[in-house]
Image (cartoon, rainbow, N blue to C red; front, side, top):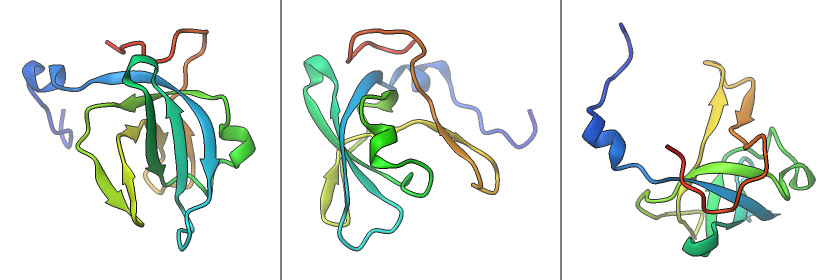
Length: 114
């Protein structure tokens, strides 16, 4: 697998991937590409993440989507907002097209991805 960095299975097991529902998308002052997303992750509670998908999705398109997030990513500040995870998306090499990884059938928020 030339060009692909591999990880060990124990490293993969460290990831906590969860289903989250987008409850709200908000503008971030001074951010052209970021949305502030409020997520429902059930037993993990409400989470805020900043996502660079503003050029690809409107607020209306995002509300209610069930997405996959990395729930145990170390929080970091982005434009003054503490982002508590990362959503997963597929993109072309040129980033001309970005697609959120979504759930195709109804499942509870907070469900683990394995």
